[in-house]
Image 1 (tube, helix red, strand yellow):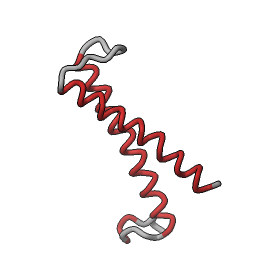
Image 2 (cartoon, rainbow, N blue to C red):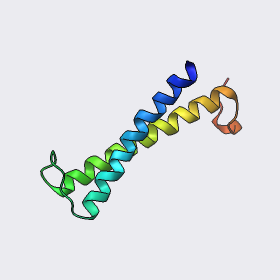
Image 3 (cartoon, rainbow, N blue to C red):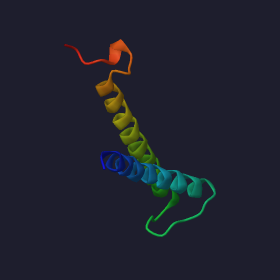
Image 4 (tube, rainbow, N blue to C red):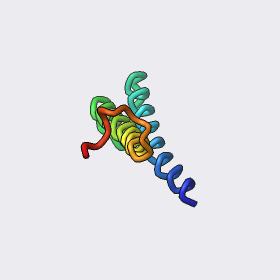
Length: 79
C-alpha cells in the first residue's frame, strides 16, 4: 500500500507538469484555451505549472535518496 501511495504522490505532479507543457505548446502554436484571456498569461501559467510539478518530483526523489544514503556526501545532512 505504501508503494501505491508513493506512486500516486508522483503521478499527480507529473500530470500537472504535463498540463504545463501542453499549455506552453498551445501558446507556441497560437492555440487559445478557454480560461486564459491571452496567450502570454497562458504561457506563464504553463511555465509555472511545469516548474512546480517538476520541482515536486525532483524534491521527492532527492528526499528519498537522501534518506536511503544514495547521494553524494556534499548533499548529506550535516551531523
